[in-house]
Amino acid sequence: MKNPKTICITTQEFPPDVGGVGVSAKRIALLLKNLGYEVHVAVFRSVFSKEEQLAQRGEFRRSQTETSEQDEIMVHRLCPAIRSTVARKQEYLMDIYGQLTTLHKKYQFGVVHAFFINETGFLTTMLAKENNIAVINSVRGADLHKHIFDCRQQKQIAWTLENSDWTTFVSQNLMRRARLFTPNIINKSSAFLNSIAPVDFANLPTPPLVTKLKGTVIGSVGNFRDKKGIEYLLDACQKIEAEFTLLFVGSFVAKEGEYWVQELAKSGLEDKIVITGKISREEALAYLPYMDIFAIPSLNDGCPNALLEAMLAEKAVVGTNVDAIGEIIEDGVNGLLVNPYSSEELILAISKLIARPLLRQAFGKLAHKTVLQNLSPAIEQANWSKVYEYVLSINHDSQLSIDDYQLAISN
Image (cartoon, rainbow, N blue to C red):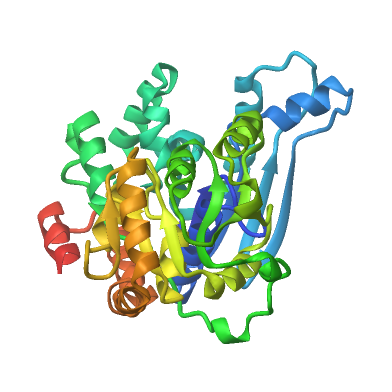
């Protein structure tokens, strides 16, 4: 018999995996655990490049599920069988779906909840519909910003949205796009921001590359790739006359490696750039106190955790007016907003902050206040509590209506 308080989050990554989706999945899993749910997390990908590489080397295996416990959360890492050098994607997905079904038969989930719908949403929603389980899908960013333009995925994304009991978004902008794409989700969707817990930056260890930081430190944090708009930041920094360091906390994605080598070389800023490479979240946090300006020139970005961390560290933010960045930063109040794709606007904003250290300090303090007041874990937990109560109620023939729920979540 299904246990309504036993839930399974499906996600493409989970700590110790490095990435924003994994950080959010762990945070939300803990919030739900503290609400009294028994939380399971199933981790799998729908991109099988690693499996294909193993197959080409003749390294075959049976399908397997590796289960461990993290902070009273059961984490199941699902790995498909590798049986052939010419296996197709659907064979791997079939194996993953079988493992996911086996987990449900063992634990009898009352709710399944997919993060990043084009990676995990279809399999999760299919499991829910075949087993009469409540299902939530959470759109995080690239699933609707990038993958919506892949005609091979459009029908699958639309089916997943249509068949979800509730869909959540990390920005109003993402929700508007989804409602245009699939209009009938308008009465079963909501948008609310990520949250972040306070961090004691004073007790973090000194990071190893701080001796290389000279002048005004302009920093950015993330897994740097197409959507991050880094080339526009490089263009802007070429025009800075004062001494500065451009600090990239993180790494540039391997599949775009040649492009970024080219762009970094073309910038002529090699002697002013410091790149940490791939590091843990804790190590990345340790660099924030050494930044004077936090730059996030994203072309699209959901609700980036790196932004919230920088605001928590009282950094002056220059960000683009996209997604949650434009919803959290109030231009001229707790940071500066510029339009995406604009090196000209970036250099004006950065130059303004370089010239006015007291303004940087004022923005940083108001950014910190914004995070504490509006982006606390308690607020996000209350939002998730309402979503879960609603989807469980409709799955158990409750009298709670959509109108009742919309009124509840708006309050």
